[in-house]
Length: 173
Image 1: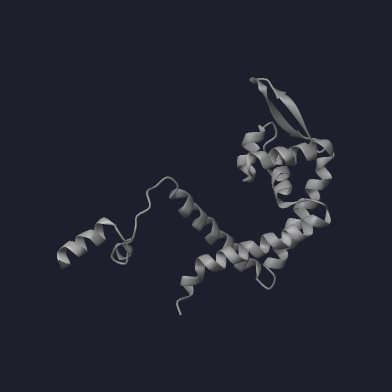
Image 2: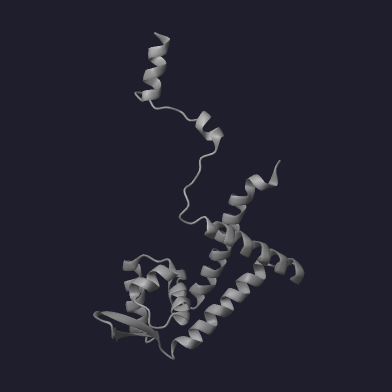
């Protein structure tokens, strides 16, 4: 069997299982993955808007509002007026968030170590290099039209009542 046929399935399953292990650990410190993503993204993007943080963390905007409300109530972040837009608020982490971020990064390290167990440092570096190149390849495709392979056009099944079926019926009569 061609191992490359399983590439997408294997990549997705490794990602899913890695995230699951991280989420199990995050629950031990009473956090969800979206909360961790929000904190980590905010750490690198102090002063962003709620909408932008939702984009960066890949979380729905309404979900992000609830996450931020909870974190603000817990004293982990503050919303400050945006000097450029009086309707908007900018987000900033508080000092209280730093120890929590340290824990999140530690959980990430442990999950990553489990995933790379039995894999040498050299193999890890080679893998990361390949993964970064693959990421660059798929990012370069953003916004480009998707070309359908020629084979797919021949195997297309037409729906009853479609133009293709009508023309077949006409030819058969």
